[in-house]
Length: 247
Image (cartoon, rainbow, N blue to C red):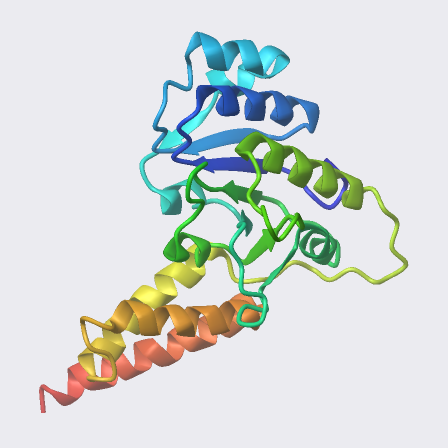
């Protein structure tokens, strides 16, 4: 991959076709991906079918890391991108075309651990899974048939990422300091707990409301420092609430 990206992880969520998995392993070899990760596979990813499709990418199958949860699969990634075919562009500004999102990553001097998530063949990623990504992209296709085969989507995304990473931009690059997916996830566990405690959220509607708040944080491209300020406020309010009860 280009100079802006290192340690690229391709993550497949619950793939159910061994041919697709094998094809993706081959693509990982074509585009010098660092690692293939699979979350809860629904097929035998080590089957003869998968190995035949992988060809020179067989090492990515052999060394593939398997996780039972998407959150665990992205624990060490600085920037997480997710692919999605069903997007309401008017409501979600942190969605963008694959070309626009990959160009955006070039505004940073270096990203140490980049992950790209691809969802299930039949229904993609859930809303909660999409909110684990810093940015979500779509691949422009016909409006009448926007859904792509899994391995085709991976091939286009890796090709576009590779192509844009080799461009020369006359601009001063920023140091990458966005809050990671794990930091955002951990922060919102604390925020949700606090808002439930003070009665702002109710149990049966908390997930939907907290998702809207998380959406806002993602749109804002929140930095690690800004998120730490938010967490500091939450910790201070919790300290005050806990200590005021003792008096």
